[in-house]
Length: 273
Image 1 (tube, rainbow, N blue to C red):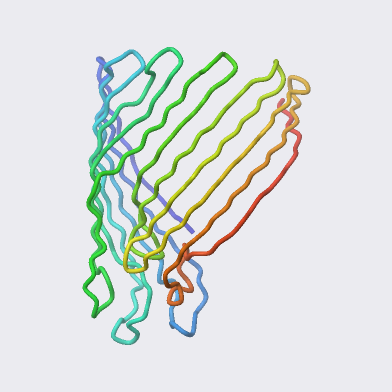
Image 2: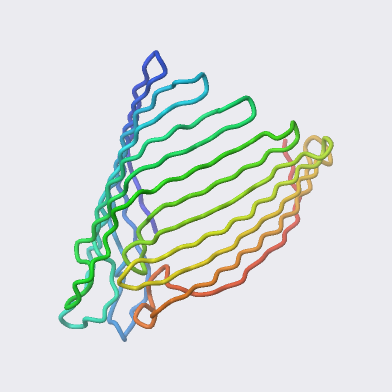
């Protein structure tokens, strides 16, 4: 269960400049039954404080440059006593800071872009349970780039590449690289076709190294039978392959590794009044 709260302020100038300030606090709780082998309950409950300050300046009629700084802290209050069992797998408290700059908006009459590049620092209070002294902190660039092109009046193409680092329950952090492409096409005046395919490579840090490869694809059709009634059909495929070096000590980690092949097909009827 996730309980959140926060506040936001926005200051906007007459020349198109703006300053946004956001702060949030969240409490995440897990209902994990007792595992007698580890004598652990709710080790992954955590408290989070996050803040973002963003300055944006409009340099084209529909395009803005921005400078953004964000940071936060995550604390896990229910830590076990490692002196009783050094094989406990438990999350470490962490802090992070990210500074980035980029631009978002319209490049031309038909194309839009959202791009940012920055430097991320993540620090973990206790890297590895003693007696090991292996460090698993992170300090390196991150970025994302998202592009959309209205190829014709009836066709839109989207491309994206995300290179990000985030916190993991299984280990300290993971490096995530996702490449995706999507297409939207209108056939006649009644049929809308949407397709998306994505490739995701996720690499987990020490102390528990692991690499996941995920392929996803979706295909949707919307047929407007009348102005208020639409028929829908959706096909989705999701394939995950995980290479876990050692997951025997992590039976309760919320994002523990496993392989799966999943797919679904659904048809429906929508009525708008």
